[in-house]
Length: 198
Image 1 (cartoon, rainbow, N blue to C red):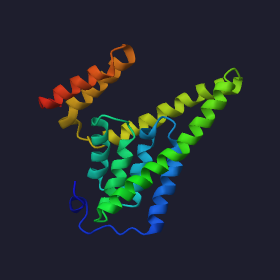
Image 2 (spheres, rainbow, N blue to C red; image 1 turned 30 degrees about the horizontal axis):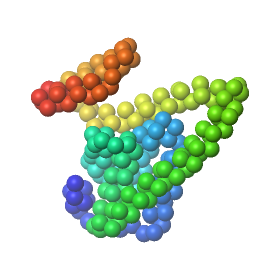
Image 3 (cartoon, one colour; image 1 turned 30 degrees about the vertical axis):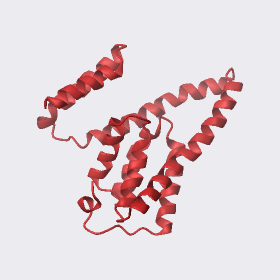
């Protein structure tokens, strides 16, 4: 999507804006317990609602393209940084946006994960370590539900989008009650989408 599609004038970003974007992604990195996708609601709040650096369409396209593309799930963050930089009218700023967002999201969580995993493995029999693992489960589930809610808000017309909602509910039920691999469900969704049914 071109910057002109999202905004009528080029976005002007100062070094303090870039530093603020980096700092925000550093903080999100520490919250990304369920993976980077679990911080999607706060990314939306910051980039679209608060700063207005991305349009709703750019935000959703970043997530959709990254999820559809092969490779790591975290690519949507690179696309968001790309769009922020591209909205300034410069391809160099787009590359800077990718660097700022990806470094911000990866640096703290990677270091912390390495240190915590090493310590946790050495102390895996401690009650505190086992309790921590059990206690993190509801937090991760809550963050993933919030992410799902943000993504579903794009489809608010239930009368028109009822097949999509029904397919979502059926897939959730299948994932919960069976051992069917997720790739089969993705393939089914692609076929139904290709046929125009959802």
